[in-house]
Image 1: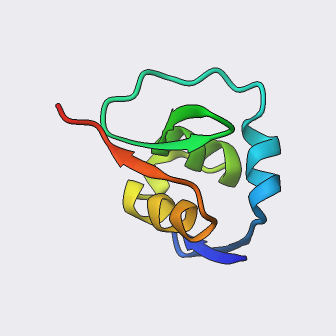
Image 2: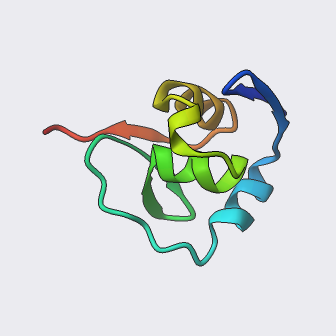
Length: 79
């Protein structure tokens, strides 16, 4: 599936995202999270891993839309 993050086009399949995040230790979740393989990851951590871009280059909303389009459940943590 083609997604746009930080004005760049990426082609991801659900299994590619799962493979990329496999074995990655999740950081503490303080805002929006995405569940991948039964593990909740901060949305910005997922974006950085799958795009290999600096977190300052994209927004959480861009990654959240992309993950939702791929069928991953996204949640907002109540602060």
